Length: 169
Image 1: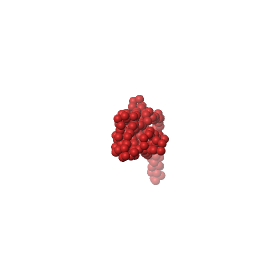
Image 2: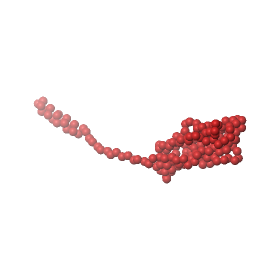
Image 3: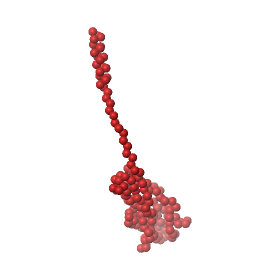
Image 4: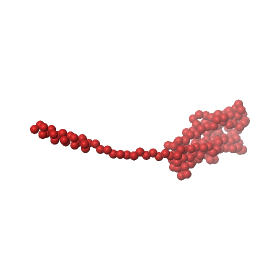
């Protein structure tokens, strides 16, 4: 009698094990997007600046009009000279957004033995941009120029350029 009960139980256990598992399949896909690019189209220029015995700053706006604001003992002469925010063209996949990384350190600009610093970097757009339907956007960069009191006259230029980095979000 015990054998008769054991055999059906064993058959039930084998059948249950056969129906306890199932399988499915899936495919894998990847899309390679075109690389993001950035190129310089205009260099930064604070234009003509005048200073007396007290130093100050010139704040350059990150825009096509590159407005300037002077503080402290700095003045902006009526003859402005060339004033321009740095401009970059960002290119990539239309409609994609990207993050902007501006310099984290000050940049030294020099005229002979004399120097000034540029820092407090700003951008437009900020902190991210969106590529248009053609896959491009203009990125403007401004900053603050620190002018010492009685700063020597001259044309001040950076020995090395500053770097702006963009990366897809």
